[in-house]
Amino acid sequence: MRRLAGAVVALGWLVVAATAGAADHDGRYTGVITCDVLPGQTIQALKTEFSMTVANGQAAYEREVLRPNNTQRLGITERGTGTVSPSGEVALTGSARGPTWSYEADYRGRFDGKDLRLSGTQQWRLPSQVAHSRPCTVTLSR
Image (cartoon, rainbow, N blue to C red; front, side, top):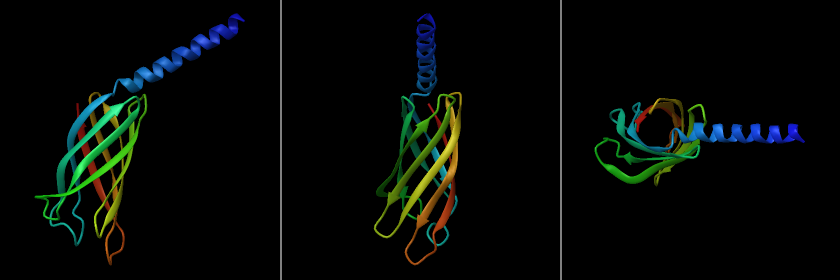
């Protein structure tokens, strides 16, 4: 019986430790996403605001989609969700959709203290064109 009680206590401490590790990253993060030029669609590389919230190992992010000249917002938001491991590894997936286009995004990275750097791709579907993969990086801090 004592062994069982000891095992239950040890398991409880593991759960507490895992939760504490994930909670270390809880908060709101802001920064910038940069992406390569989208051939035939944009005239310059993308650079715009990106925000993410982390709570209990779950992440949610969003950013405004800009017009091809990167100066005005379209009124469309890329949104996504993901996970944050107790060791600080982050995996996000999201998407955005307009009247004639759509894309799915996948970003991954790892916390370094209160800073986070992600890299990934946006898989674009455009009318009358082959799908295009657009590399991006995201830098965030609390």
